[in-house]
Length: 117
Image (cartoon, rainbow, N blue to C red):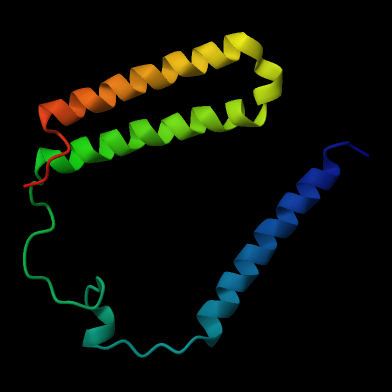
């Protein structure tokens, strides 16, 4: 008996269950298409303009700033969990990291990036 036989049996069983569930769904579901069911549905409101309009670059700048400051938390959380094990080198590296982020934040603030008109 091959060591891969249980894996092959599991894959076949998973595929068979998926195919059977789709066939049973097609057979027992009601099918009464009409104009409202076949129409485009987006949050219940009729379209009033083109969805491919241009956005102001501020939306992207604010999104990038959010991602940058969110990544800060991702880097600080493991440091806070292992605070007693990182020692003085870990403490100074986090302070340097935070100083760079704070300088960047104040630079953005001074440039007026965070101002919304």
